[in-house]
Length: 377
Ligand SMILES: Cc1ncc(COP(=O)(O)O)c(C=O)c1O
Image 1 (cartoon, rainbow, N blue to C red):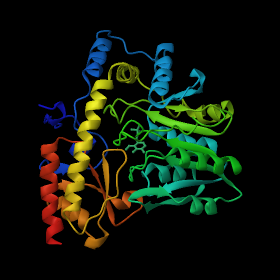
Image 2 (cartoon, rainbow, N blue to C red):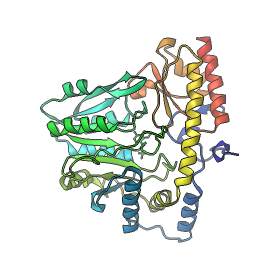
Image 3 (spheres, helix red, strand yellow):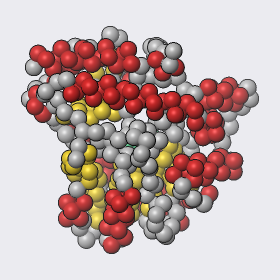
């Protein structure tokens, strides 16, 4: 049996995803997966808990070197150890970016649709911001760069990216990254790129490009990275920012160890284990998620009221239900026993996002339940 087909109950684990709705609802909303972690991760935790003291823990040299090796191997991105800032989660990194890198009078650009913490970060820092859109081109969501250029104001200082994109799944190409970097350089913008989904690229011919890879290290780029999503331990959590520019790095990190704690002792262990021993599990995961993407695509294709562009990456399907013209679709899905993420959360009312990071039996059952709603419409 494929290890990802295993059905693992998450009842009684205080799961945010599984506890929000009634027990008989299949929850395909918030982004974690129903898969057991790689054995190397469980073993690393078991090893660490043999020692009964869990004191304040810092990133070891071995840990920083493991990240250097990992980024070099996976993305051919060579970094210095001191470019790294360790954070407990990527969401903390998004909020730190908005609060610490912008003066009150400065303006930012964020994507739309987007993971909701992009706009929450700017609301939190109370900075003005504009949203730049993705549009469909050859069945792929692309950033409208001309429209983005027009949004740049004299006081625009920060450009936030989500690459790969949640919810559209787009992986930015070398050309797109170069164009974005050129635009940022021309206008002296900081680019903060949320790259948490970088290792969830489903198309084997696509490659993740960290934002700072192709430019001079003095340029104002920062990548927010984490293995939380890919290796499915967001409840333990650890992220890092790669910030080559020292001033930017110090400014970003100023709330660390005060408002924002460093990562916890177990988080270093699981992240190290994932980098050093998680590769085989990761390859199998991507194979399984590719199958799940196909299952979702076939389901969407079988309903004339639904549409979905090609999803390069992530386990989050972004489905257009405009043609159904059903203003209470999310409620109807819930009544039929499936919880999805309403598109409104990402800024697009007529869409919904479906998390397919679950075993195929449950995914098919959820889609069958949803079909009844779509067909009745
Ligand atoms: C784009 C993006 N950034 C950040 C996060 C959350 O990351 P973390 O759990 O490390 O805060 C998510 C989770 O869905 C996400 O999709």
